[in-house]
Image (cartoon, rainbow, N blue to C red; front, side):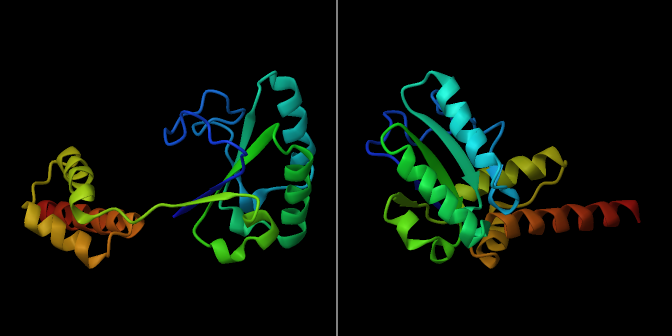
Length: 169
């Protein structure tokens, strides 16, 4: 999962999930790339101007799903706001993003989580469902899904459903 961001200087708090000088926080108005409309871009610029912040951000999730013409509009806004405001893009498909946009961004590649990193999350989910499994069994399920968090979560859902069906029978 890659994160692409535009900035001349990375903010001091980069790496946290909250960014105090962001217009769109990670828990609120994150725009979805597949649903980005051209009329939203002037609205983003307007919000930046009204924010009164030295440097504001707009977050566009799944940016690779933005059409080529809309990517060109985003690139124009990036150029217009260079050094004043910026974007944070997320994507799983860097190759689908316009090279001119990528050249204006810092690309941060986030590696897959290791099975040991996913183990506590999986155990917490299973405990919440009143299911106990040995760590080796959970790690085996995680390994089977090659660390893909979505697939691991689907595997856990399957395990929970299977246990519930056995208990109900």
